[in-house]
Image (cartoon, rainbow, N blue to C red; front, side):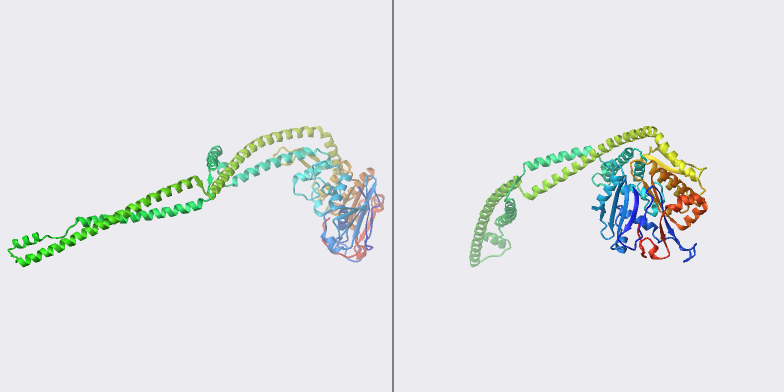
Length: 578
């Protein structure tokens, strides 16, 4: 990809023409010294970073609310070339979900997929690799992109960082993926075991306080017994009617038993009364008086005899009455006993019926209990299966880890010359800046139990400049552009942030290297810079070098003296990220 121009549908916008498809294109933020003190005035806000944001916007970056809120009605048009073919992408600040590519409206996802196919040879089933994930290595989009040479997307996942760099360097990404997948599988099994530890049913097994095999056998026996009971279970439709009758019979039997008890007590009391005779005969009375020397007249004796006869009659009547009552109660007891016998028989029949024919809710309860036991048994069996799977998988993964580590060692030995070539190129670039520093790319096998296949780094061992990190970024990006693999990118774009902190002498070296390598390899280098950097280059470069490398390659100037000289041609304050 090489940029040609950036335009807008708004007349205030100052079109940016990238006049060199091959070579340097310098966008300068010019400062009006007459308007403010040179040392105090800032180059911020003129449009350098906004330029990058708009280019990223035209190349499928995420939606930007700041564009919609502040630039309603604006459209931006980017002309570029890929492998000799011309393309034009147009995107509206209002309808950001559509990008028009060569007149065809594409959804954002489809546009990015198409650009990915045009610019990168991304294998199938590598979701972490995409156009938007790889493009920032060539067009670093934001402030955080200049903090780490290998992480322009400011990702937090080391695996994704390594995968993208391995892909662009031409290393075997399947070795990288393999280790990450092995680690992910091992973590998955560990997570499952962690869930077992928190499960209230399985926790005791996990801690070794219960034996899962014995528990399974016990549950199997209980399940078998319940299943047998349910097979012989007979549900009675009239269960509750019969149960109601049985309960009534039980109450009736209890009442009869109490009544019989009371009646038999009455019989016993009558019998006691019959056996008791408190009456005294006439003869006994006369004898008592005679023994007391008392004589009775014939008239008195006559009266005693009548009285005796009277009491005798009363006693007979009493006996007759009690005997009659006794017989009546005996007959009543017999009747109630007969009724009790019948009631017992009926009660036994109903109990026998209820024992054979049971209630639906009892059946449901038994069924629910059976289901619960089966679920518990299944859970324990799954636990046993999981433990076996874990131990088996762990052994398999441990074995694959060792095999992958060995294979990686062989692979690194096979590609050592290829890697050395890339490292030597990076080192040569770095030594152009810091001749006495040890520099190069380091690549080794990561044998630890993690998801990272390669230990990878770019090094420039020197403490002579605060801008070493940014020099490293420049050298690495140029290395990827010229010696990298799996891409069709022909340009890199650096924001002026790259130059922050770099010594003016190293800035001069950077432009010499860029001019030499970019032009010789038919590539394009775009950079935004501030006026003070231009002034420093005038000092560090010879007149001929400045007139060859810098002056003819300035393709756009952004002024800070008035809004119409800024990128948009208007004054707009908004927050955005490229």
